[in-house]
Amino acid sequence: MTYVKHDGEWNIPAPHIREDGVWKPICNAWIKKNGSWSLYRSINCFVEYVVIGGGGGGGGHANGDPAGGGGGAGGYRTNILGETSGRSSDAEDPLILDTGIPYYVDIGGGGNGSSTGQDGTPTTFIDIVAAGGGGGAYQNSSGRSGASGGGAGGGGSVTTGGSGTANQGHDGGDHNGGGNGGSGGGGADEEPSNLQQKGGDGIESNITGTPTYRGGGGGSYYGAGGLGGGGKGGVNASATPGTANTGGGGGGKGKVGTTFPNNNTGIGANGGSGVIIFKIPSLYSATFDATIIVSEDNTTIPNFRIYTITDGAGYFTIS
Image (cartoon, rainbow, N blue to C red; front, side):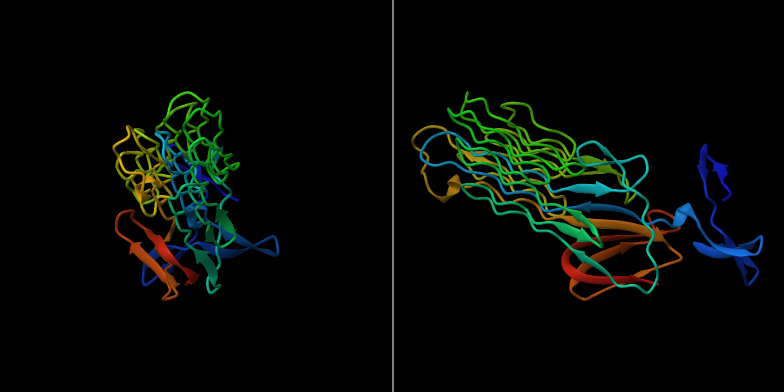
């Protein structure tokens, strides 16, 4: 294997072929050396991805002031060198896909906001699964576990945030029994501290050429959502849903005083749906089943195609 240093980094150069007088890079080549054939792959041909599960829904309240917890963010997984997966873990192993093989994808949905927020559902990219975020707790209750855990409910009880998942997201915030505000949901990159109403922050990625945060936890009560699509908590007004295609957790809901009606506005907000983003060399292209909602960008990053799948389930192939 031969490495070349360019701009301070060592890489495996792409093999080239000459076509119509022009040398063009290719991803793979069979090379005969010492009588044996071996497959040569360029590092530039590895598929980069960001895969995020659906965020958990926020929790709500009953007849008193205590607020429900914020929903946990959906699982965050990536293999991009120099970036991190959820729970401050290293980027995953390189991924190489073959041409002509159908690969399965499925975008996870955000969990519904409710008295106890419902969990988000997982996003699947081939065999890479980003779990759904845990639902935010009902008042005086503990958050649900998930990719990132749902936040604990507010009130007089000592409650805990739901547990997060290794390499995907953080735990939800705990509540030590003091104060009516619930705790924020866990984010892909942050666990809210005890009684912290703000949701945990997500992770920034540059896979599309535009640095963007995704995977923020939902806030509770007066708390803001975490960076990366987490929904804001609500007080005497509806909480804010997690942003679609970020895996953000939904905001948890509370109230102040006795004049605000105790009706269905006491439920938390929905979590945001998941997303799949992957990047391949522009020598290749992908085709998708009609059941998949996808966009392509072949101009922002030279020599690469970026596919963003925002909804649906089905198969794609590379050619």
